[in-house]
Image (cartoon, rainbow, N blue to C red):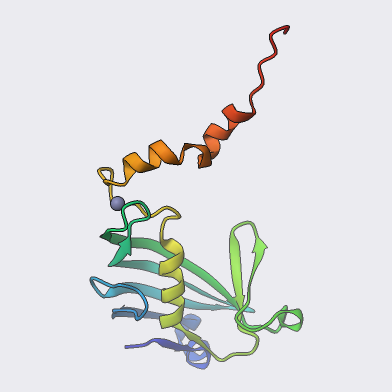
Length: 167
Ligand SMILES: [Zn+2]
Protein backbone atom coordinates (compact mmCIF):
# COMPACT_ATOMS: atom_id res chain seq x y z
CA UNK A 1 0.00 0.00 0.00
CA UNK A 2 1.39 3.34 -1.04
CA UNK A 3 1.23 6.05 1.57
CA UNK A 4 4.28 8.02 0.45
CA UNK A 5 4.25 9.33 -3.10
CA UNK A 6 7.72 9.63 -4.57
CA UNK A 7 8.03 12.53 -6.99
CA UNK A 8 10.88 10.79 -8.81
CA UNK A 9 8.66 7.83 -9.45
CA UNK A 10 5.91 10.18 -10.62
CA UNK A 11 8.23 12.00 -13.05
CA UNK A 12 9.36 8.68 -14.52
CA UNK A 13 5.95 7.14 -14.92
CA UNK A 14 3.95 7.12 -18.11
CA UNK A 15 2.36 10.53 -18.81
CA UNK A 16 3.80 11.56 -15.44
CA UNK A 17 0.67 10.15 -13.91
CA UNK A 18 0.22 7.58 -11.17
CA UNK A 19 -2.98 5.95 -10.00
CA UNK A 20 -3.19 4.39 -6.61
CA UNK A 21 -5.60 3.24 -3.96
CA UNK A 22 -5.49 3.97 -0.27
CA UNK A 23 -7.52 1.79 2.04
CA UNK A 24 -6.77 1.91 5.74
CA UNK A 25 -7.84 3.41 9.02
CA UNK A 26 -6.11 6.69 9.71
CA UNK A 27 -4.70 7.22 13.15
CA UNK A 28 -6.15 10.28 14.86
CA UNK A 29 -9.50 9.91 13.16
CA UNK A 30 -12.16 7.74 14.78
CA UNK A 31 -12.49 5.53 11.74
CA UNK A 32 -15.44 3.14 11.76
CA UNK A 33 -14.37 1.80 8.37
CA UNK A 34 -11.04 2.19 6.60
CA UNK A 35 -10.72 5.42 4.63
CA UNK A 36 -10.90 4.42 0.99
CA UNK A 37 -9.38 6.72 -1.60
CA UNK A 38 -8.95 6.21 -5.32
CA UNK A 39 -6.32 8.75 -6.22
CA UNK A 40 -4.58 10.09 -9.26
CA UNK A 41 -1.32 12.04 -9.04
CA UNK A 42 -0.18 14.12 -12.00
CA UNK A 43 2.99 16.05 -12.48
CA UNK A 44 2.29 19.41 -14.17
CA UNK A 45 5.39 21.48 -14.78
CA UNK A 46 5.86 23.23 -11.46
CA UNK A 47 2.98 21.56 -9.69
CA UNK A 48 1.79 18.16 -8.60
CA UNK A 49 -1.94 17.65 -8.58
CA UNK A 50 -3.64 14.93 -6.58
CA UNK A 51 -7.30 14.25 -7.25
CA UNK A 52 -9.75 11.51 -6.42
CA UNK A 53 -12.67 10.36 -4.38
CA UNK A 54 -12.37 9.77 -0.65
CA UNK A 55 -14.91 7.68 1.24
CA UNK A 56 -15.31 6.15 4.65
CA UNK A 57 -17.12 6.31 7.97
CA UNK A 58 -15.77 8.08 11.02
CA UNK A 59 -17.14 8.67 14.49
CA UNK A 60 -17.73 12.33 15.34
CA UNK A 61 -18.96 13.95 18.50
CA UNK A 62 -22.18 15.92 18.20
CA UNK A 63 -21.68 19.61 19.08
CA UNK A 64 -25.09 19.76 20.72
CA UNK A 65 -25.67 16.58 22.70
CA UNK A 66 -22.05 15.34 22.78
CA UNK A 67 -23.14 11.88 21.63
CA UNK A 68 -20.93 10.07 19.18
CA UNK A 69 -22.39 9.54 15.75
CA UNK A 70 -21.27 8.00 12.47
CA UNK A 71 -20.41 10.48 9.77
CA UNK A 72 -20.12 9.50 6.12
CA UNK A 73 -16.95 10.84 4.59
CA UNK A 74 -17.43 11.31 0.86
CA UNK A 75 -15.72 14.09 -1.02
CA UNK A 76 -13.61 14.85 -4.04
CA UNK A 77 -10.02 15.58 -3.21
CA UNK A 78 -8.26 18.17 -5.35
CA UNK A 79 -4.92 19.25 -3.97
CA UNK A 80 -2.11 21.13 -5.64
CA UNK A 81 1.49 21.00 -4.52
CA UNK A 82 4.12 23.39 -5.70
CA UNK A 83 7.49 21.79 -6.37
CA UNK A 84 8.90 24.86 -4.74
CA UNK A 85 11.10 26.24 -7.48
CA UNK A 86 8.78 29.18 -8.18
CA UNK A 87 7.44 30.39 -4.94
CA UNK A 88 9.59 28.61 -2.43
CA UNK A 89 11.75 31.63 -1.72
CA UNK A 90 9.41 33.28 0.70
CA UNK A 91 7.33 30.45 2.03
CA UNK A 92 8.10 27.64 4.40
CA UNK A 93 7.85 24.02 3.47
CA UNK A 94 4.40 22.56 3.99
CA UNK A 95 2.80 25.98 4.02
CA UNK A 96 -0.42 26.37 2.13
CA UNK A 97 -1.28 29.47 0.16
CA UNK A 98 -3.96 30.53 -2.26
CA UNK A 99 -3.04 31.10 -5.91
CA UNK A 100 -6.55 32.00 -6.96
CA UNK A 101 -10.01 31.88 -5.44
CA UNK A 102 -10.42 28.64 -3.58
CA UNK A 103 -7.37 27.00 -5.11
CA UNK A 104 -4.83 26.31 -2.42
CA UNK A 105 -1.35 25.10 -3.06
CA UNK A 106 0.95 23.42 -0.59
CA UNK A 107 4.57 24.33 -1.08
CA UNK A 108 6.81 21.28 -1.12
CA UNK A 109 9.88 23.50 -1.19
CA UNK A 110 12.13 20.88 -2.72
CA UNK A 111 10.73 17.92 -0.80
CA UNK A 112 10.83 14.84 -2.94
CA UNK A 113 7.78 13.07 -1.68
CA UNK A 114 4.22 13.66 -0.60
CA UNK A 115 2.83 11.93 2.46
CA UNK A 116 -0.53 10.62 1.26
CA UNK A 117 -1.47 9.39 4.73
CA UNK A 118 -1.05 12.90 6.14
CA UNK A 119 -2.75 14.49 3.13
CA UNK A 120 -5.80 12.29 3.66
CA UNK A 121 -5.79 12.91 7.39
CA UNK A 122 -5.85 16.69 6.83
CA UNK A 123 -8.38 16.52 4.00
CA UNK A 124 -10.83 14.33 5.90
CA UNK A 125 -10.74 16.71 8.87
CA UNK A 126 -11.32 19.68 6.55
CA UNK A 127 -14.30 17.88 5.01
CA UNK A 128 -16.15 17.78 8.34
CA UNK A 129 -19.04 20.23 8.67
CA UNK A 130 -18.45 23.33 10.81
CA UNK A 131 -21.34 22.34 12.98
CA UNK A 132 -21.36 18.66 13.78
CA UNK A 133 -24.88 17.54 14.60
CA UNK A 134 -25.81 13.89 15.06
CA UNK A 135 -29.13 14.23 13.21
CA UNK A 136 -32.34 16.18 12.81
CA UNK A 137 -33.73 14.53 15.95
CA UNK A 138 -30.74 15.44 18.09
CA UNK A 139 -31.93 15.83 21.67
CA UNK A 140 -29.65 18.83 22.15
CA UNK A 141 -31.53 20.77 19.51
CA UNK A 142 -34.16 22.25 21.82
CA UNK A 143 -31.46 23.65 24.01
CA UNK A 144 -29.91 25.28 20.96
CA UNK A 145 -33.04 27.06 19.80
CA UNK A 146 -33.89 28.28 23.30
CA UNK A 147 -30.55 29.49 24.47
CA UNK A 148 -28.40 30.27 21.49
CA UNK A 149 -30.64 32.26 19.20
CA UNK A 150 -28.55 35.39 19.46
CA UNK A 151 -25.48 33.67 18.03
CA UNK A 152 -27.37 32.98 14.82
CA UNK A 153 -26.10 35.68 12.41
CA UNK A 154 -29.39 35.71 10.54
CA UNK A 155 -31.15 36.87 13.69
CA UNK A 156 -28.62 39.57 14.45
CA UNK A 157 -30.20 41.57 11.65
CA UNK A 158 -33.26 41.99 13.84
CA UNK A 159 -31.21 43.18 16.78
CA UNK A 160 -29.84 46.02 14.71
CA UNK A 161 -33.13 46.93 13.10
CA UNK A 162 -34.30 50.35 14.18
CA UNK A 163 -37.82 51.43 13.66
CA UNK A 164 -38.27 55.08 12.91
CA UNK A 165 -41.86 56.03 13.73
CA UNK A 166 -41.73 59.31 11.76
CA UNK A 167 -40.63 57.68 8.52
ZN1 LIG B 1 -26.71 15.37 18.92
